[in-house]
Amino acid sequence: MEPKTAATLENLRAEMKFPDGHAMLNAGSLSPTPMPVLRAAETLRFEQATNTHEFYFNRADALLDAARAGLAAFLGGDAARLVLLPNVTWAINVAFASLAKRLTGAGGRRPVVLTTDLEYGSLQYALGQFADRFEREVVRVVDAGTWDEIVERFRGRIEGGQGGPVAAIYVSHVTSGLAWEMPVRALCRLARERGIVSVVDGAHAPGAVPLDAELLESCDAYGGNCHKWMMAPAGAGFLHVSDAFGPSLQPLVMSWGAKNRSLRGPGELIRSIENHGSYDRVPQMVIPDAIAFGRQVDEAGAAAHVEELRAYLVDRMTELREAMGTPWLAHRPGPGESAAVPMAAFTFPACGRKQFRDAMLRRNISCVVTRYREDEEIDDKVPDPAYDYFLRASTAWFNTRADVDRLIGAVPGVMKELGVGLSPSPSPD
Ligand SMILES: Cc1ncc(COP(=O)(O)O)c(C=O)c1O
Image (cartoon, rainbow, N blue to C red):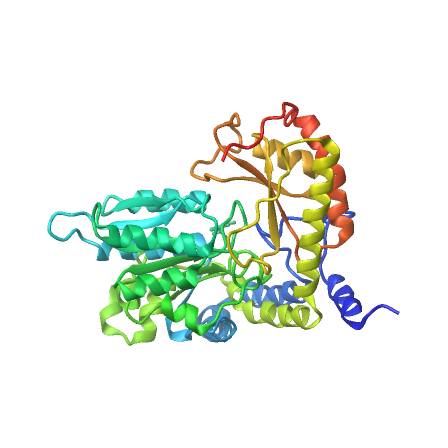
């Protein structure tokens, strides 16, 4: 007889719909929406579409307040300091805009924002756009052996005294390209002790890596997505802020809330950041439905399944690497305790990322190639061998060994089709 947890996960898996025979190994970009969550969204969208006036003026705020309260309880945060936004890109841009306003060079020395060499490409670009008010310095973490070493690198720069004063740190909780969990708790504590603002990109954390009040309290601005590992529909992100940083938040879009901010109570400060005109906020309204579904998944033993499946993926890829006699496909494990992260990255030859995705899709598999230095969008351009590339596969709770086997079976053919990995030069480090 099947153990009870496996049977329960199996039932829940039936609520996830994919194209026929598809191996979805990229929930890390965007999760499929479970059917109960989709139905809840459709019910609200029907109301929004048919009883527009009532929904817009009388229902929307209550639904969003309930979603904010439910999300705050799930994260261990404070609803009064939790801003619901379309995605983490938006959230981190709000944090950067607020930093830019707050950080002005004292005594002619431009303040510095310390970041890492593993940040998400579009947000490195965003930080660069705001950096006319401050310097941006990149701490190399990719060759650090441990979490402690990473923290020491930050401490060294903060205390070292070269360059302008460090006014803020910006770091991902789980990095995009290599799927590494970073020591954000220690980094935020370090920043707080020194009076430095901390901004965390938690795109991949909620629903994958445990969050709690201690972390959120030690961090000044924590942005996250609910449409990755929490399984809400696309369009559900958030920014949680500290008491101290909250009042300096700047809206990215000027709307009603921005105009009347000073006349309103503390809750309205948050609302003013959310208020950027009329748009579809149903994905945010169904966050509680996603949390309820996720709870069932957790109770059914998802964590153990995800860990086992990730280990299986790493083993199978290692076998394939040995069988092919290739220097590529080497697992790049993170520096810290990342057992919970449902993704793994493997070295891969330089290739067109779109061509890779398309070649996999033709085999009915969703999987991506990422880059270590994600500072430029080159999907359609000639691959640059100076960049380190990685095959990143997600092992979500709904994935199975059969999905992993499909990927392993497809990799040699995809490399051949793309004409990469044939000369045996390993990834430069
Ligand atoms: C670390 C990281 N930050 C930010 C993002 C952007 O997420 P979104 O497009 O939902 O804003 C991603 C997307 O995968 C990511 O991996």
